[in-house]
Image 1: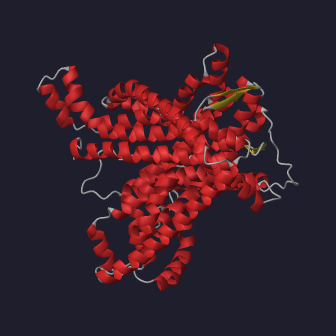
Image 2: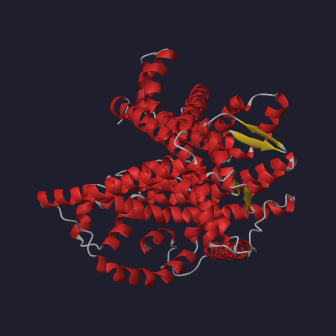
Image 3: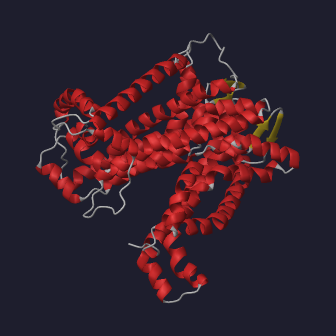
Length: 582
């Protein structure tokens, strides 16, 4: 683990400390002190005691409170990110290193990824309130857990892929060096998976803003739980019809997203480049002023020295788990017998769980809810489909224009990143007011609300795909004097097809999740409700009908997983076999 900190460390062998190093030390130490002070201030509010069921259902909308609320939201995001990384390391490593665990864990991860994030919140908030009955910590944990579920699955898939595609030479080197499992993890597995982990972490963090704002004020079983945060601020301001304060919160949110990108994600992505395994260096390596400052300072070196005894103790203590070796050959008969026992146990547990769940649904909501929710699912699916078609028609040409023009790309990328990270539900009050004043039905307007956050994934991925088109192809198209239509048909569309598929899958997943908050919207005392599966889940959650909530979530999972398996996976295969540039 100390190896990962080493790249931040300054040059300890320098004979004298330069003036710039001293300035860097002062700035870094001041920043660390400020961070500790903020953590202490925030922690006082997190552990605030409550009495009985006196959890507040509203917060102040005074502008002076907004900075504190923004910090509380930011704190939840980073706590969720920390637990997402811990979960990623444990889950992905076990799935990648244990063949039998992989058979169960990967399908489970696929299903967990398909479950609407806000459903986790409605189910788990009761558990958290039971665990922490006399403190705001229970509601805080529920909000953080919702963000965790929006970040963890994507990061876990990325890290798992990096482990299973590790070069064979690295595995042989680990065996020859007789590394323990702990040493292999920190010296081989984590560095080799660092780049995809950081980039997927950044994307997941951006997506987490949407669910954070939705989880800071949630109605479950006819009770509203609110924790101070910028998301709940927007919700309460909309309820009180304070549109000016909604705009103020949007401005603070944009500043916060840009600040996090500059201070945290930009230096992290630049730092992760040192783990790239390539024969040649990138012509334009990403740079960061924050990372340059850390490298000039000696504070990271001191931190490294402080944790070194701990890492040595951990390396010594984890030797009992043995070397990072697994048998290259196992007797076929023994392996098959264990596989059969393992499959019988797993299938038995799944059948038992399904039976118990169906019995519970029959007792509480009735099995007749399934056909009804399937019809509602088709209505929401139609909205998702319209959204994908319009987003493709609008953003593919724009994304190609941005991606194929380096100057435009440099200017547009930060804007697109902010748009992709911006929680679209901040704009819901404004669009709800528009729907009320214009008389447009929420059944149609819901598509716009779902699209506010989901469409950017298509733009983001198309830009990436267009900017990756090799210059050789572009020059060949120019030399052959292809017309604009021929250029699009023969070069551009095949080249960006894989990127569009990735963006469309992400956009579709985001739209299904967004339907839960987009099909029931409120401004002041007016509530608009659309016909659809998202509204069904939202209303079941609000009324505390766990049977119907379970049915709604199961049907949404069936739609998402079924479409992934039957449609998106085929498009992925087509992109790999026919339109790959490699």
